[in-house]
Amino acid sequence: MNKKDYIDQEVSKTIGLLDNQFEMPPNPFFYTRVKARLDKKYKKRNVFSAILKPALFTVLFAINLGTGAWYLSGDQEDTQIESRKELIETLSGDLNLDSSHSDIFNLE
Amino acid sequence: MDFEVLVKAHQEKVRNTCFRYVNNVEDADDIAQEVFVQVYESLSNFREEAQLSTWIYRIAVNKSLDFLRMKKRKKRFGIITSLFGFSEENEEEVLPSDSDPHMELEENERNQVLNNAIEMLPENQRTAIILSKLDGYSNKEIAVIMDVSLSALEALIHRAKKNLQKHLANYFEKQF
Image 1 (spheres, each protein chain N blue to C red):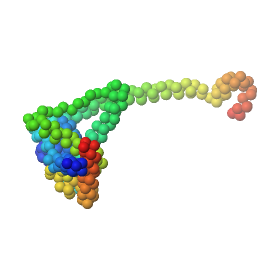
Image 2: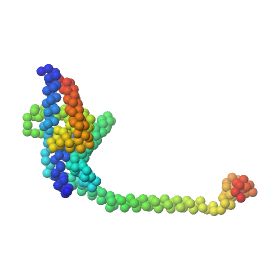
Image 3: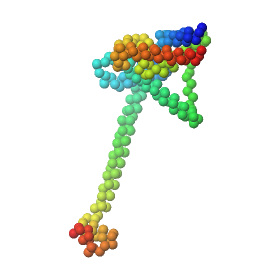
Image 4: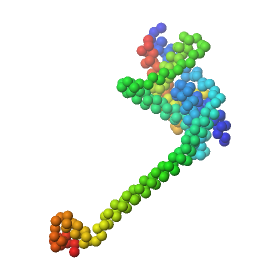
């Protein structure tokens, strides 16, 4: 047998397998397995929505409250300098200026 | 339609379709189960403009192709990990049978050669040839599943056959 004949014969034999392919044996438990998979998936989701979701929201709410409280307490420190005059005095003090030079701020 | 009735009506074709892609009974069953899980979850989104069966088989084709892509990625990753000595051996189990071992070996080898050649085809040609050779699919139905015209499908099948012949001829030329 020459090379070309050998190749043609093997190719047609192999392609012929396409018409005679293996069929999956029936699986009588197939539906049961699909059902089990669905049940498992939805059970997991229920655990998440029943326990984890409220817990997550509580944690987020607590973080939110904490951040708000921290922000407001920081704000109060800032409002300690209430008047413009106090502000000028503080700045003058920081810059070692006499309060008579406060006109350089052009604020009064 | 009752979900159980739906599964029982389509399971055989879905399982066989998945098997044609993955060539492994356990993997095919696993993918087919995932197909029906998706069908269950998306039934409310199903639009009547397509046939229910066609829609299910399209999901089966897409899931099988996704599985193959994932397997390919894993294989690439496996090569990298094996370079660093973390390889994970995953030998496929071959079940014994009663037929002549020599004949069976030859047929298994030939099947493997054919599957390798099919794997080398582009995805659309692969789907066209797999579905056209699977019992129960008409060309019209395959065209709807693949979302191509009938003439485009025929061209795809023709090209797939030509490419298969080419890949196989190359293989057997090296074997001679």
